[in-house]
Amino acid sequence: MDKTVTAEKTLKVVDGDKAKVPDMDGLIEPVADKPSRAEAEEAVRTLIKWAGDDPDREGLRDTPDRVVRSYEEFFVGYGTCPKTILQRTFEETDGYDEIVLLRDIRFESHCEHHMAPIIGKVHIAYLPHRRVIGISKLARLVEIFAKRLQIQEKMTAQIANTIDEVLEPKGVAVVVEAAHQCMTTRGINKPGTLMVTSRMLGAFRDNASTRREFLAMIGNSQSGEAAFS
Image 1 (cartoon, rainbow, N blue to C red):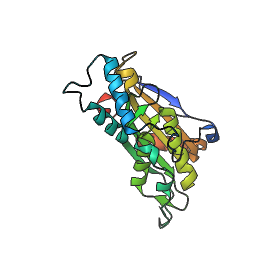
Image 2 (image 1 turned 90 degrees about the vertical axis):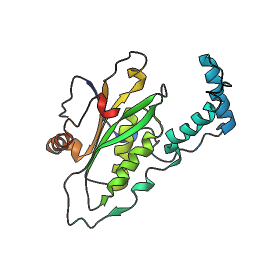
Image 3 (image 1 turned 120 degrees about the vertical axis):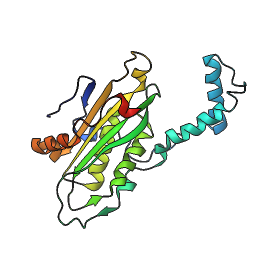
Image 4 (image 1 turned 135 degrees about the horizontal axis):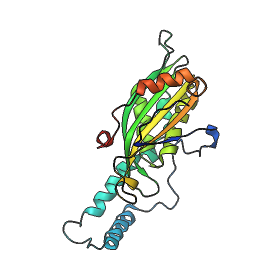
């Protein structure tokens, strides 16, 4: 695959048979022993104590409630099936059969290893086969998968596989660029580092010129730390 990346980017290509990707592309059912809201708030109080502070002092008294409410926003993607939002399509395209690209879709997610923020952007392209999808639905698809505990490689594959399965286009291409705070604010502490992943299906995988056209269209789109601040 022809790719050009800067020295500041770490390139990972998600390839292979999409059947090998874990089946987490739909609605995720709640775990059987999901804690109550009160138990979740008590867990936050425990973490505050573990950090060395007093959860009963004025500044922290309402923190457990705030944290639980923020988690409801951070992880709302578990309660939504991404495939359903792609069901409505449009066939009146006057024969349009060139690349459809939505680039620079900003997202915020959390890594499943440290629960630290992942902040970045997604570029999605597909080659229509008889029908197209509303572009807002592509952004919504990104939002659903991002609002779950994730690793970037899996999220990249999930976005591409869902579009391929539901829309059945001639090809799908997805590139994700993101900064991972699990390595920019802790551990190795390397701010400014971006991870880049890609998933190419159909014509974008099989046809080098189609793949190059897509990569040229997304270009070096405002990468760097400032893009994800």
